[in-house]
Image 1 (cartoon, helix red, strand yellow):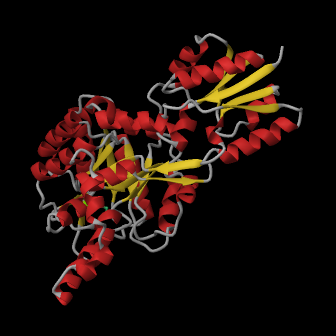
Image 2 (image 1 turned 90 degrees about the horizontal axis):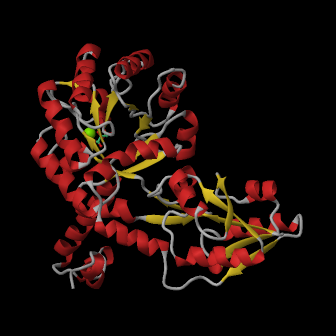
Image 3 (image 1 turned 60 degrees about the vertical axis):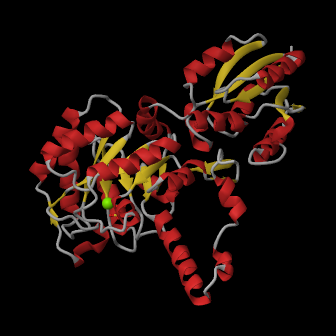
Length: 432
Ligand code: SPV
Ligand code: MG
């Protein structure tokens, strides 16, 4: 009996999958390699069903002899282990991001005279279309809230971008690019105090109150499904912070990041140019403890942000605080820096990685922006936040347009900076 290998994520099963298995069965004993949760999360989103659930489903499909784990996108390790006579796949992977994987499959099979059999793609089903439909239906607070912890457990690096209204929320939700054999997208949304305040024409000094911040959160919740992290500034008074935690949790926000400063908060990127005071370790620990005690689910995360490097208090102080905040129950640590080079962040990482009770580490590489995600991940960073880039890119374009209209006393010249009317009308579906 010949051996047939078929790999799939098997998250959303449809008749196309059944067809592939049926065709495989005609050739021999079918072994299905199911992609692990980590692999699926690395190239699209994390699966709706976990590995064990997906394995259970596929094991019970007629024609499947055996189900194994495939823990890389690349088929090679499993192919070398099984040495199948055939690999069966739909013919839709000849073009697009999977074509490199296909090429490697053909080359590997050659070693023992194995063959790739391609089945005409089943028309009328598209996982990406089904995915989009699922997104349109939206999500529940319960499902969304838990997504961040899941992502952190599955991905070596979680990638977050700021949004400050529904439209920018949609950009974070939907933007995708193909690169090599991967489809890249953002994992979640950062609701920055700087961008939320700036969008309202206000300074970033905790002036925009919680009710207004929650309106922004709601606007973004309405049109997205990805996990949300709120920039909670200092978290305010402990007595107020516990209400903030509960409100966010109820809405389905996944995490709040609070910074260890007191008094009139100014943006960290001013550094020591403005007067800013760091909180005492004891008081900030008390805030973290109160927040953790107030939350009602296990999913919500309180991430403690350390301002020692920003305020030139030194690496030792930053490390001491990281230990103290973890001990108080922080679910993550954010270390911030406004240096042009990542050296002090990397030095912090080296010390931080020695902790036995390490929690996920967050970095915001706004000023030290030459470092790549891979390098941060190798240093031990688990989450990267691009904290202000959508508003910073939109503002100059808007000012240019306004100036052009003033100079020319008409809008014709400004068309160069704008998208066509036809496109804006249909940008958000459902308007026609
Ligand atoms: C924000 O985005 O509001 C932040 C990050 O707090 S930073 O502006 O770098 O302080
Ligand atoms: Mg902020």
